[in-house]
Structure formats: C-alpha cells, structure tokens
Image (cartoon, rainbow over all chains, first blue to last red; front, side):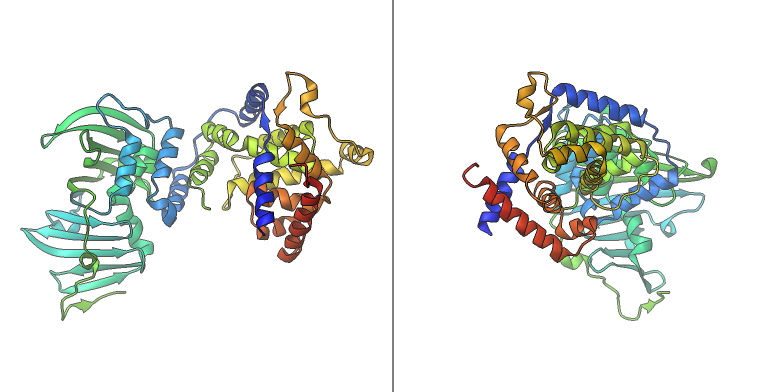
Length: 285
Length: 180
C-alpha cells in the first residue's frame, strides 16, 4: 500500500501538463467566444432557488470562502484596503470565526406590524443555534429557539402562554436570512458598491450597499431591495446592518436595522435550551 | 470534498456568467490537459480534446444542471471525448501504427503544451496499460475521482474498477521501475 501511495504521488506530481501562454490565451478566447457575452438574465425564481440550494448546504452556509470567491467573481474590491483600513475579505473571515454574536433587531412591516408590535428583538446566534427574544415595554413577550442540529424551531408566546414546535423547512431559511454572519457573506457574494465612511455611535465605519435581489436569500424575492452593512474601521466587525425589501409596487415594505452587536461572544449552551414554563399549551399543528 | 467555490461557479455559470466560465477554464484547464495527456499520450490530441470539452461546456450553459462535482464532470467529459476519438479513423490509425507522438521538446520554442521529461516518461508508460486500467489510474490519482464514480462511468462494478486500478498500478510500477 505504501508503494501504491508513492506511485500515486509520482503520477499526481509528474503527470503535469500546462498550456503555453499562447495556447492558454488562444483556447480561452475560443471558449469564451463559444459562450458569448455574459447573459445573467436568469429568472428571479431560478436565481432564488440556486441561491437557496447553496445556502441550505450546511457546509456552505457559513463558509467565508463562498463570499470571498463570489465577490472576486463579481469584481468586488475584496482584498483591497479601501483607504480606511477595512479589508472586506478580513471582515468575512472575522465574522465567520466569531464564536457567537448578540445583537438587537428593530424591524417594521408595512402595512401590518410584525412581531405583534414588539419594540425590538435581541438575537443570539452561533453557527448552529439561535435564540430570538422579543421585547415589549422592557419585558420578553416571546422567544424563538432554532437548532440546526436537531432541526427544530420552537416559538414560545408568553402573552398567550403557548408554544409551537415547527419544522426547519419553514423557519430556518427565515432565521438564516436574518443571521448577520450569513448576511455579511451574502453582501460580499452579491454585486455591491462602496459607501465610504460614516460615524455610527462614535465608531468610524465603512459601508457597502447591495441592491442585488439574490441578497434576500429566500424563496420569494422582493421586487426591490436595498441593504447596507457598516463595519468598524478599528475592529473589522459589523456595527450596523440595515435593509429595506419592497413588494407590491411599494405597498408592502419591510425594513430592519441590526445594531448593538457583540461579536465573538461566548454563548452558554443553556441559553439555547427551550425554556417553556409549566402550564404553557402546545399548539403545534 | 465539497467545493464551495465550484458550487458558486456552477450557479453563476448557469446564470450565464462569462466570468464564471473564465474562472472554470482557468481553474481546470491544466488538470484536464494532464488527464487527457495521461489517457492519450499525445499532446495535440490532448489539446484538441480539452478545447472541445470546454467549447461544448460553454455552449451548454443554458441547459446546464449539475448536482455533483464540477471537476469530476469535466474529467468525465474528457474521458467521453477521448473515447469518441478512439473510435475515429485517426485514433485507430494512430493506435495500429503503435507510434506515439513526438515529444513537444522536439517542436521548438513555439510548443503549445509544456511538460517535463518525467511527464513524458510517465505518459508513455501509461499508454502501455490497457485503456480501461489507464482510465481508472488517471481518473483516480490525477483527478481524485472515487472508484464508485469511475465504476459508474465505465459501466462496471466497483470491484472490477478496483481490480483495474490494482493491475494498472502494478503494471505501471513495473514499467517505471528504475526510471523514476
């Protein structure tokens, strides 16, 4: 077997043929001419499905390499220091390496309010689990637990003293869409433009903006969207993520702002254990 | 191993991205040339085969649907193209004459493919193997294809492919003994 390994090494290394520069260029021209100009005109639905398939794969989900590569493909200024100190490839890597993240989400749906009129959510994410606490008047009125390992999502409604256990088919993509880690990767893998610098809560940030529908990362793409991420020049971590999705010719609008980030937080596993008080009714379908 | 970059390339290529195609070409052209050379022991044929494979690939972007490995898919295209060529008059004549192509070093400075003396020797030795064994050895070792996928490609059982691999490696070792 060792002999085979050695021979395999030899074959792998020695069977090495390269095109000369001229041949490489000539073949490349022929191949690209056979293809014609870029025609990125595939339907939004198909784009969505492709993106969803990519994002659903657990290996790809949080892979910084995806963003790095895709950003390179769309010509993003990924590896360039844009003058301020933010190198986007490093941002993607830092976010990817973050053990856990806690942040606040404020969202508004027009015409109907989302989240039963909660003031804001505090979200806790690791690579496989999340916990979203909905706050109203300083109290938690509901919690959503998602666990990719057990493929369960549990919604606890303290107002109605009930809970629902659901399948990830419906819930995980949604929570995944709002995961800042995933969003950062999507920013970099979608077409985007640089916004320059801005100070947020005394922190000097640099931002990028995308209007690429693929950023949505879900089944039903919005008619239009805009999303921005602002990253601290000093730490390289996102400080604020904001977005707006528009449907029905502007009649339906969803906006969100994520801020108060605590990156690389060490989150206790017990945080993600569903806490369902005694007497709560199971109203799972 | 799951190739993250390839998944994105496949996605963008299907959407019609010329840049994705350019990257796929850049990423795999040399590997495919090596595979083709290992199968054909003929640089001109290898170059033609790889160019044909990429041109067909480029033309088929619209209907492109691939769930598996891009690398394995392209290598399979090379294999199929090589088999087609083997059926052609030119390949048969080449085979029956028993001659191998002149090494590129003999073609002067304007050669189209570049490879070393060791590659030339190895390629010559591979050409001595029965074609099915050569295919298994090249695909498994150079392309990293799994035996079960090669079995599917060759339309035989995994144990048959395993046997071809074993015999192929034994013969290759004997042929190369003392040379490399």
